[in-house]
Length: 515
Image (cartoon, rainbow, N blue to C red):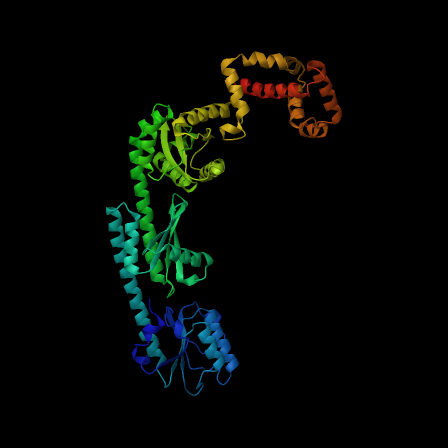
């Protein structure tokens, strides 16, 4: 990019003098403009080098200062003044203002042809732009070629650093940042603090790496000596694109390899492998994994038109991107119409459920599936027990199909799991009728809505006001129904064990009725 310092070698600037704003000589010039009016802001777009004779503010230092303030506010590159009949010197207030804002002021001590200056500098700018496009195209070809021959993101970043010679930081959530060139730990912390505090706003630029509509990480350029140029930003943009493509390609390769591991994963879910075999497999896939707790998430995918069009490989990679950010290693397995995700926790145990819940919300917001059912098994502290998490996920799926489950999670549907097990091993229907038959018979014969009334009354802990409000009936109707319930099942139905048994049987009846 053309900088103010570069134009000082131009033939028209041989006798020119920089009198203020020396620290701004690296300012970028995108255009050259001749200005002889004082109201400048609406005429400028930023990065212009301004040429003036000072006719609009001659002998008026206050107007001169306002003119320069306007140029600084418009983010101009610098000001060139021709000393002559309108202005012979720069007031101290303007001089100090320029130094304070790193705004170069260059003076011509004799008359110069502004037309020739603008022609020369515009030619330089256009040639410079062409050179940038050529360099950018050449860099893109190099980086794309390298991306085809490497599986290593760090290799791409080293190429960018070699090309720009600017400090580069590669950050991925949940991992230690990587620095090019490498730095001592104390220096790393200082640099990250500077970036975090935004204390060098124009001296660092970051670009987010997007994978499957999610932020995977970012690449940061940082220069303490100068501002990051537009050209360097374009190079960064090309690099981020290449890195994203490389990461997606690597994920597809891993996914293909994962298909080969499907049989092993299926046997793991069935509880066939020993603890040692499981651990050897995990270490081969995730060398840095140290915890030993996991959870199974099951996504049942109905066969409808939208779901048939789903690229299941892409969807698995999408799931991986989500749950990786949430602190899990993920193994995915297709089984009939189910996608089973084995999630190995690598963060704080106390937040597992919260992070899984956030991941599920991301999946649902993506709207990639239609009418999917998502359930989560129990958390296991030993990975040889992943089969138990899987079985509890299957049970939870069965329960969610029987009732409108209030949660995805196994451990939040415990009463229904208990009902399910009772149904398996006892005559649950007979037990329900033993407790509720008088009310069931009355409702069937007279449509008395006693069961509904009892359930709502128990839910509101015996509050008649809340019960009547929820049922949309007057108090007198509620009193009549409660009196009838008492006559059928006894006056002490709200006491301790009786109430507990009734609540359980009401839920069990819903469960059994679905059959």
